[in-house]
Length: 427
Ligand SMILES: [Zn+2]
Image (cartoon, rainbow, N blue to C red; front, side, top):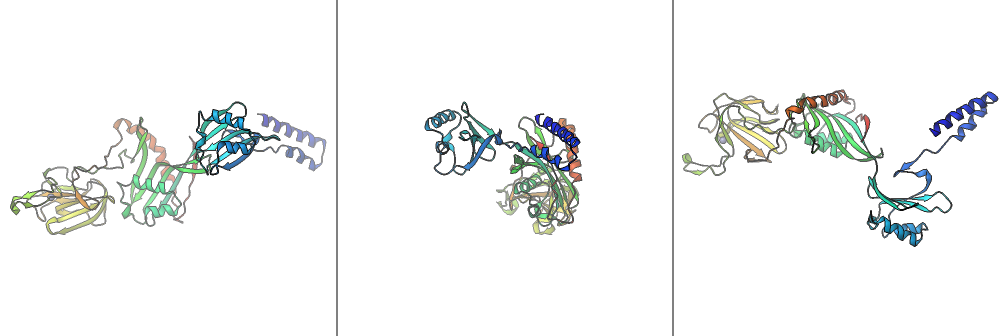
């Protein structure tokens, strides 16, 4: 208000002045008088009100020694220290950490305030201009929403890294899609878009990734949306779901056939009469089903084998992630080819009796880190879709995010640089 009225008064002055005098030089004078220093705020103080001394704690330095160097007498230092230590242990000052001293703007330059920065965000203020007040504060953290997009050229991490995107973002992106997309099988032409948040201290100092809000991946021509949504308002824990409100952390289907029964479980100690009760470990789970029953991929992945070999007969092997693969034996015939990307529930073949088998069944083998394990005993990621009562809320929530994602352009002309538009939201 004060400044506004001055400006008005000045403008008025200028006008009046120019009315009185035609000389062109005249206008300059009043404007020069108006240049006021911009208010420089830090730690909640207007730094223009003080002589500001910024330094770092030296090794062997102490709160007392610093004040002493600025001519504060012992008794005063003692008084301040005694009062301050009730709320902050001033012996904790670490060498190398920055501090700021605010001195009175007079000839004596008496210290009035000591501010110690524990880290980029947290600081301690010991104010002793009048009474002694000690308190801890945090610098304001700004959360900035950013967008990124790109076309895969090499691996996802190489592509994202080439764009200068932070490692933490690459890691979170890989986590989100770990169950949906096999990052080892990315194809040239696959694309991604991300809406994410970054934290900044006082609008400028990068303070880490705040997380991904939404992402899109186009893999082998298929769309994979991911939206972060909080289903548990108590814990505020969010998870990623697709446009149909289904979790991206897809568990494996319980069985590769919709109809049938388990005829033989995974059993490393199996002995078979036919072989004279010799140890014949069974490293799969047999699902007996009529010949021709469709066999389904239990999770998204890439077909790494579709062939016929010895006792396995005709089989398909799917790689789901770096960790997991599944294999389906004794097929009558396969429905997929090597290299093909399949989604959970896709038909990959039909139940048959090829290879060593006494009857029509699919022997389902579950590979973890190159070893065959019993999927029924493994702790596999659960797939919790959004509860029914939240689906409408979820759909409303993702609508603007999806529009935003869809409108992020790709930088085809230059795959290594990216437009990173951003809007600011203050938290
Ligand atoms: Zn089997």
